[in-house]
Image (cartoon, rainbow, N blue to C red; front, side, top):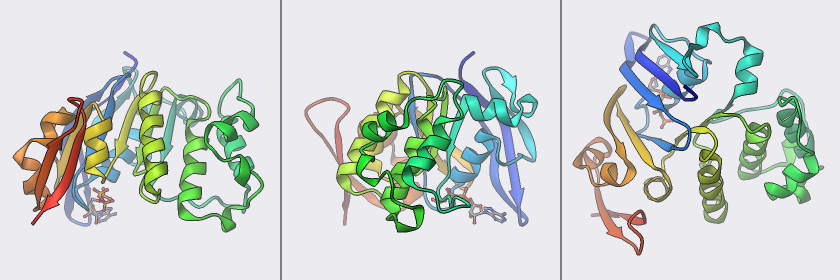
Length: 247
Ligand SMILES: Nc1ncnc2c1ncn2[C@@H]1O[C@H](COP(=O)(O)OP(=O)(O)OP(=O)(O)O)[C@@H](O)[C@H]1O
């Protein structure tokens, strides 16, 4: 199978259970949003799925093979993991960061082409220390997806982006999901509802809802875990939702 899967994952730290009996499967062609309140365990789960954090119990499989049996090089070629924050060890330029990402492929794509594709050409020579948070996030996304990995795990890639770039990102993620397994942590429920096929809702280390995006957006569990009231309004197409907070 080309997807990824985790079975009965349990993670504990500091005397606390961060993930409790999580079993999920993710297939190519589906954009999955991982949603939940601060501290729900989203980043921990993504790190476990990416192989950057070992679970205390359970198993992760990539393409049907236990992730523990994959070498770091194999993992790097097959999957792209975009952490919430990343500081390169050196003060690379945008062009160099993207080139490093592209070099994970056996047949790297031309960097100039990648820079154009991600709207980064004008920033090509700019050093990391002179980039804004959003520019860094866009550079890291370009580097992560440059080798066209079959598995993409992204931790809030839109967090520091303005609304224009957030929409661009959502369209980009949709396009990438055509050919890759894509799991993305999202805090923006509106974008998650509009662009994801599936939403997995986590709360206190457990999966509390896992269904088609529209169905999770209508699930009362969503309001319960965030302790808010949501106003939902369907737009022209079935999958378009506008979500606002209600008093
Ligand atoms: N090493 C650790 N020791 C103790 N607690 C930890 C450790 N790592 C994470 N945690 C706790 O585990 C919980 C889950 O953290 P995680 O980063 O996975 O949450 P999250 O859903 O991604 O949150 P956010 O939306 O704030 O990014 C949090 O309460 C966090 O404080």
